Length: 458
Image 1 (spheres, one colour):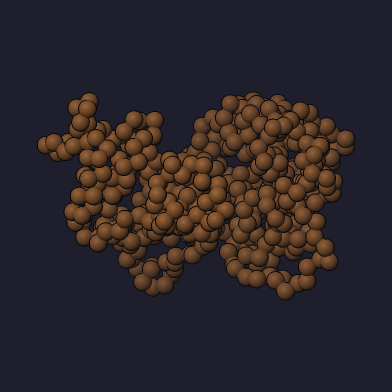
Image 2 (cartoon, one colour):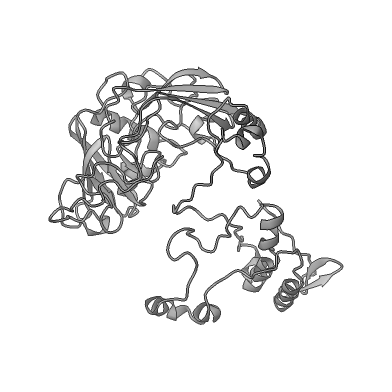
């Protein structure tokens, strides 16, 4: 991927109509995008996402090693393991083969530099009225499946009914927020929403993948499948070796190749995905030149596994790619339904015993940064003191909140990283004693019940 500032200096339109979901009570306008807050980053006439290179060469064969396996090509019905469910499967436009109504940062094809926004794809425009609980999509008349069958509102209704009726998956149960669906024309859909529905619901509905009804009507959607399903995206499957290999070819007449959300993408003529049950075998295939790129997920291997000839000769480039994307926090979460976890002093004591600095150095080769907030890489990067407005909101609960919340920013306790946490142990035992626990022969015993503390990690 090439990063750049394409068209940053282009003048903005004379006026901007807010596409903010919260500001649509009275508006009734067709738009190219929707966003949860403010205005979308990219205006209606944008040419391409800033981080793409629309002049990138379109050629070549990309071979990738995937750690895992698959036993179905149906990514939606929850049966078996489809390629898109394999954790190491790259999400670059060929993990799911059916295009969505609109693209978002949650999809393989959406904006990587913006969150909580959707942009036109199969749906060339969208209209949303909060006041009337009405969400409409106008479909691109050029949108088609890869057998040249046009994508119509009937396919969207089929997809919605099929995916929301499943007992699993992210679209399961969404039909409870729909009063009715109307299809005034083959290229126009009207969803009448049933309040109260989540504020994100219009965006989630816009992420609906559109399945080909004519392909599935004579097949059992609820079974696994290892023949290539009909697709509508930039790639189609050309060869399958069950559990081992998927080869895909770029669709030269892909209907959406000139859309702004696609310019600069999907440039390889052919993509081969080689699946390996063992992660070390996947790495060995890369070392031997059988595959072209490898996404490293093990800190130990990143630190110690790249001392071989191809790296030394410069044939393999080992590179850390920085990013500013927000992502979910990886944490230990206390189950406060357990009585002793309900005491904040117990939770703090356990946190004091977690020697992050030593673990990071001795086990993870200092490859990771400790998570300091629920939203890493989002401003603010760590928890800060409450603002005056936040203090006002918290005031009714001040008698139940720790005083430190109002006087000092939250930070994890620091250690020297040498494995010696004697001071932290003393602090932890003091807190545990205050909470009704005492140390006896290496066990924490409750002073009242005389039962030991048991921690279960799931």
